[in-house]
Image 1 (spheres, rainbow, N blue to C red):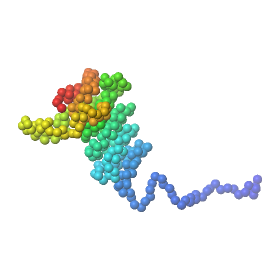
Image 2: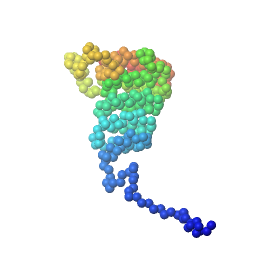
Image 3: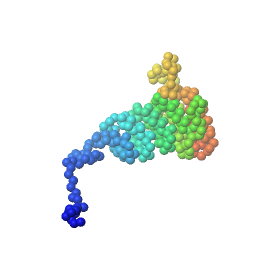
Image 4: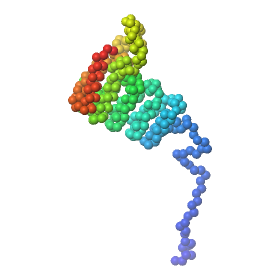
Length: 319
């Protein structure tokens, strides 16, 4: 057929004509002035809940870099609020995020860490019994740092003594007689080699601050303690004849109170912690499990032997 019947041949070349009144960039903001440091920090803190592990690690690294060069008072939010944003990341499945988390915690003020020790310890205990070995290892590292930063606040907070002992008992497979009758299994722990050594060392540090007086662990002013012991007899034990330094000094008798929850209580007194440690069977369980590990020898046997000596010496000392 002729070209007149089909019409003119169509051209395959099209002119690229693009007309739009605006250009939308959903992930960027075009402004003539750069954002301030405060707005950038707020942006980093808000994206700690991002679904991408790489983004969480990137914003944590930015916050770590800022806190290492600037005081925490310059943050747009109080350190306690930042601590609440960081606590859920203890159970983060990304190893890079948890590794960055171990770098930012030492930069936070110790006072604010002590004030929020309850929520922090709740996440740490959940990580200690997690199914992932990497999360368990990170939780132990964070617990070791917390014991070095606020040891007395940790062992004396609500649930800080008994519930943490219960977590160690579950991790190491050392059940007490009461827990063996329940849901806990008495099988050996899944930790082997370095993991077991790390667990025993952190447990030894925890028991040292919980069973030994502060004058022995070095968490008090040793100079003032030494001066007090140099006084003659009547003045040496002056604090024993004065009013108790803490409120509700006879609360452990529970004369008029409701039935107590021993697992979630605060044990600020050294004698109370020792009493619960022995009464709830943790002393016998640790010594029994320690003897079994000590026979294995090697690093595990040495760590278990040091733990057993610490428990015996701590329970033999006067409060």
